[in-house]
Amino acid sequence: MMSPQTKKQHNKILILATETCAYPGADSVGQAHSTYPANTYILRVRAPVLFPESFYIDCFKKGISGIIVMSCGEECPYEGAYKALAKRLDSVYKKMKAMEIELKRLRLTAICTVCNRAFLNEVKQMDQLVREIGPPQLMA
Image (cartoon, rainbow, N blue to C red):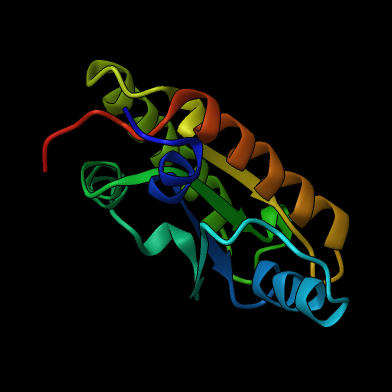
C-alpha cells in the first residue's frame, strides 16, 4: 500500500496554458510568491486546440492523473480556436467515458493574464480530486 506522500507524488497534474492568457496568469502567481502543489507541471502552448484527441488519452496512459486546459476562452486571438477546442474535448470526454476514465480528470477553463485566484483555485481543486481518486489505472 502506498503512503499518502508517495500517492501524492504519483498524482501528476498537467496544465496546458495558452501563451497569451493563461501562461502569463501562471507567471503572475509566481511573481506574487503564491504556492501551488509541486505535482503540477505547466506546459506553455500557443493554442491547446493544436493537440489531437489522442494526446489526452496518452497522457492518462502515461501516468498523468489530471489535465487542466487553461485557455483564453472566447477571447482567444485565433478565430474559432476556442469553439474548436471545446468540440475536440467533447470527443475526448466520449473516449474517456468509453475507457472508464473519470471525466473530472480533464477540465477546460478560461484564465486571464491576472487571474491569480482563479489559477490557484483550479489547481487546488484538481489536486484535491486526484488525491481522492488516485492515478488512472490504465496500461500504456
